[in-house]
Amino acid sequence: MNLLKIFQITGSGLFAQRIRLNIAATNIANSQVTRTLEGGPYKAKVVILKAIPLSKKDPNLKVVKVEKIIDDPSPFKEVYDPGHPDADEKGIVKYPNVDVITEMVELLSAGRAYEANLTVLSTTKSMALKTLDLLR
Image (cartoon, rainbow, N blue to C red):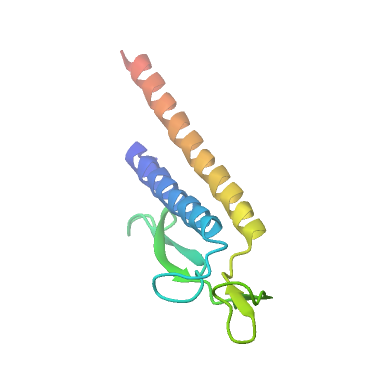
C-alpha cells in the first residue's frame, strides 16, 4: 500500500475524532445552559461521519469525513424550579438535552480512536524510516 494513502486515511481519522472530541466537550460544557443567544436551552450536537472511497481505482480504501453536525432531536429535560430566572409560568425550567454520561462515553471512544490513528501513523512512519535505513 502506498504510504501517502495510509497518511490520508489516518489523517482523516484524526480530524474526524478531533471533531468528535470537541463536540462532546462542548456538549458537556453547556449541559446546564438554560438560555442561549438563539433563545431557549442549549441543544446538544451530534457528529455525523461518512466513509468515502479514497479513489475510484480502489473503492475498498476509505477515508472518513465529517458529513455534518446536527442538533440532537431529543426533548429537553424539564425540571420544576419556580425560583429559577428561566422558569415558565408553571415553574418549569427547560434544561439542555445533554446526557453527560453519554458524552463522557463519546469522549472516551473518540479519544481511543484518536490514539489508534496516531499509533497507525507512528508505526507507518517508523516502518518507512527503517526501510530508508535499509536502502542506504
